[in-house]
Length: 267
Image 1: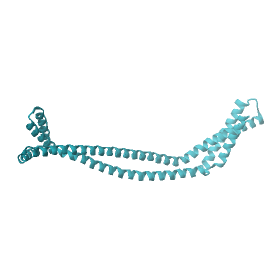
Image 2: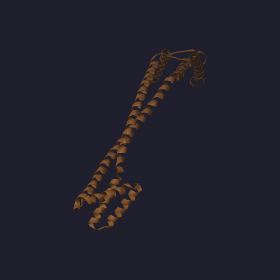
Image 3: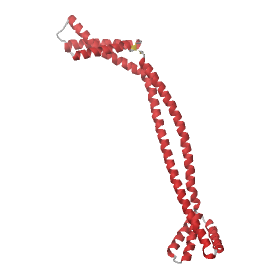
């Protein structure tokens, strides 16, 4: 009995939906007419060939009518749902496109944030490199100044330093690298303290002459600042577009809710 009760309740709910949910137009009426005809045929076939083969006459008609109703309700629900989905397609298509655009913009924001994090990490590394390089260069300057002051021949040593500096300034980067390599080899071989001190000063002067590399961390930091500024601008633009997309998405979702909340006019 409970199964029969469930079937009756389902039929009542289906009938209620068909009679209160939709407003039927010519096309939907024709389709429902075809569904009714098919339901009658199915009802008679089920009654005559399968469920009640022993009945005839009026009893067979009543049995077929009893079977026609649930078949028709099911077919009518299928027809009306298909027609509803077709009318709803405009809303679904717009909402799907806006959601896809929203996801794309959110991914773009994530990419921008990741680029900013990478650039900030580059800036931190460049700042550390700049501080380290500045300390190293200061050590070399102090070595040169200390050597000039020592030994009671400051004037002579200053002239010597100026000569070495002029010579080093005349070298290109490749020449400076070659000079430093030669000085390193000589430092490994020389044992005389005075000669070794001179070579160390020349090495420091070579390092200072090549200290154009000190501008590299600052150049990196300038590049980072520019990249972060561009990323911030891009983020503002993406956020603005994302706001517009979300507003439009909310609008279409509201239209869909309104469409579904009212009686739906089928073609």
